Length: 413
Image 1 (cartoon, rainbow, N blue to C red):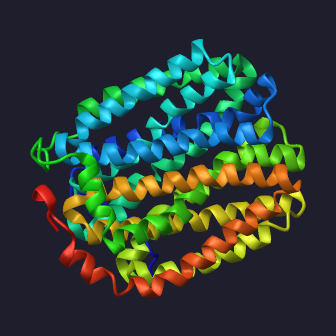
Image 2 (cartoon, helix red, strand yellow; image 1 turned 90 degrees about the vertical axis):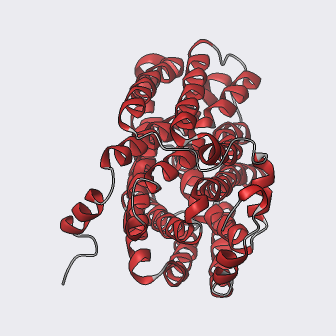
């Protein structure tokens, strides 16, 4: 039996477009995800240093995810109107400012919140990397290609694995300073290897919020936003909060907790291209039903909070299911909105960032109010089950979304 994704299939797909651009987009996303989850990886050390509560730590972890959600919409619009390459360099520049501020500042909780907001620029990378890769490849390979570039969320693995070790040697300020090096490398390579493309829209055609609002009113778009808020929000929110959860629940030190979170992030990142490829072959909507049923089941089991070896296995599978679902959803985005991939990916990606913000905040608040993390997992199970029940009605939205999307200011569908 042939494997789902053979090397020959991968080679044909890569040669069908401009692979250096794909590599540049992947690097941009990888480094940006490291920046985006930097405070998640360092939350235990920062919390111990400043005497933060579980809720304060959860807000510190979640705020970059919320900032990234907002910036993804603006970045997606900027890619369509001003060009993805220029937008991508600006996003990396903001990240550099954030980590430099963290090196020399961060002495108070209020200042940390300001740094956390700027770290949200890492989340905006998603709305840059996806259109950069999408426009470099033909439609027949969109699911696989977007899955490959989106596997750059393996940056979550790298930062969760490395940042606690940097902190142990240099303190958390020094760990933030080390992040400036990969950002500078990404700026240099993104400048040299990524193809410059003509802007998709003419400057002045309309404000980004008008275009975003027009697209957000399309039923298929807000449905995609809701379900991506579950899969990607769960992936990034749960992964970033795991060091805190494992420390509070199981007494794991930051390095062990970061390593476990990194393992979860690795599996969720590794499997994402497979989700896109399976969706290319069998259709995204049918596959999503199984994704959400599996996700609801796994979060219920994880909510029992078994012994550490068992919870690690359950968390790895849970995050892997989320990663697979992320690949499926963006195959649908590329299929339904090929001409507006920048803005569409920005909106859907923003919803994922909002979901990522709600997960750690929800876990932190429920932990403080109930004394247990059980209800955080129960909440994830409930929204996963609800998402599964929305997939069948979505079958009737697709043709309407493609044929009748509003088109203000040249906003075509």
